Amino acid sequence: MTGLHPPLEIEVGGRSATARDKADLIDVYRDAYEDKLSDPFLSDQRHWERIEGYASAKGYALVEGRITGYLVGYALGYRLPENATWWKGLTTPVDPSLIAEDGTRTFAVTYMMVRQKYRRRGYAKVLHDQLLEARPERRAALLVNPSNVAARTAYETWGWRKIGELQPFADAPVYDAMLKDLAPALKPR
Image (tube, rainbow, N blue to C red):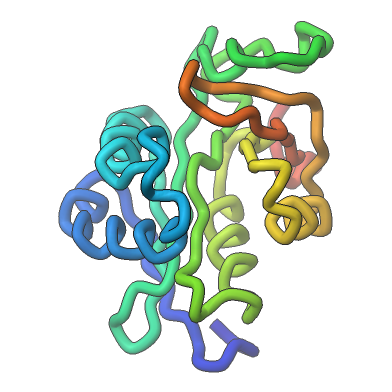
């Protein structure tokens, strides 16, 4: 991608790319979450189980960023199905219309990470933009740990807004739930 040094080579894929690149994806995860892997919820095994679940969903997409063939980061997500359980862990009240899913409305960004050595160079923004640029959904959702100030600040700068707090699983942390409109002028309503 232009403007970054070294430039990031982008590959967009789906289920087959995810299966093919399992070892590299897990390696990036281990690097990015190095200090948190002792938490059972954040173990690389649980991470891969979640990825396999996301990869089997409709509208799944994976964007990988490489530098001379070396995977430095990735972003992935899937389209929330009708009556999705994504929002069930909300711990703050929100307008029910905000969380009603019809199977076409929302793309959930489930993971976006960059190896520690390659952070703060603009690579996460490239992965983010590539993942969302051609999505047919009207909006995107993600969860971010509120203690991850750098990520939360970046998301806000990129147009995300917090709608509440959400704990997706009983053993998971409580995250900030965020939404972002996706090119509303281009999306059919």
